[in-house]
Image 1 (cartoon, rainbow, N blue to C red):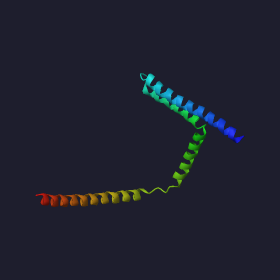
Image 2 (cartoon, rainbow, N blue to C red):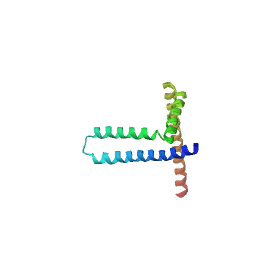
Image 3 (cartoon, one colour):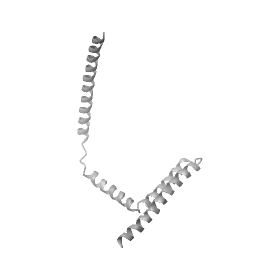
Image 4 (spheres, rainbow, N blue to C red):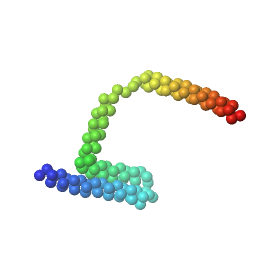
Length: 122
């Protein structure tokens, strides 16, 4: 019985994805067709159609899995220990100093090798 439910669910999911694709096409074509209208109205219409398409997409199995992924990502982001302003400033300064030192070393090496090649070539 579970196999039948999955098969009908996958068929229904395919219909839902077709509805989502149709909504996206309608939004794109409608935006082009009504290009003379003010941009505010077109953006609002696109947002409404996008919201409807998102609701339909979240009703599918992949949509629910994506929503679960978003919730889990939010939980993981809350676990991150973000650096303080002082730590960020110090790290940035260290990176800038290392980049400058490496640039000077590479410039010196390039100048030396250029001088050596000019001496050999004549």
